[in-house]
Amino acid sequence: MAALNLARLIAASADMIATHADELTALDQAIGDGDHGLNMKRGFEAVRSEAEVFSAKPLPDALQAIGTKLVMTVGGASGPLFGTLFMALGKEISAEPDRAGLTAAFGKAIEAVAARGKSQVGQKTMLDVLKPVHDALAQGKTAMEIADVADAAARATIPMKALRGRASFLGDRSIGHMDAGARSTALLVRAIVETIGESA
Image (tube, rainbow, N blue to C red):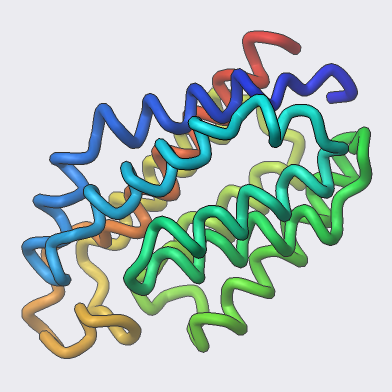
């Protein structure tokens, strides 16, 4: 992982979000504000526009800077949550992490997201994807297996009742819809692990 190409990761993430922005908006229209796709696309395009600046920094500093940019540009509830994920990951990770170091840092970042959102696994949020992904990482699964775990975890939010965020106001009516934040998290996981897998 020492040869991590941050510029490629940023481009892959921004491309993935842009490609699926309409899908994310449709998911959010069903049980949220309907702006998740647009907000996420705006945030990751902002990150893409400064990819060279971020890539010139040591990995911990770059991740924290990306998190700050996401907080400033994504907006809504997602900005602080995705921003916290990247900022906390940057705070915990080393400049050239091995898999064990990444797994540990990712676990701490997930704890930070849970604290920021006052949420936990099972409440139909991005945490329902982040935790299974962390488990898969800890279990030594391959890049493609991790991406598949993320997709399955996002789908698993469909029968859940939302207990956090705007969707929670709908009560039982939130059941039967995939959580937009879980889906966007799964998309980012796939973009990142596929890019790392290609260069591994």
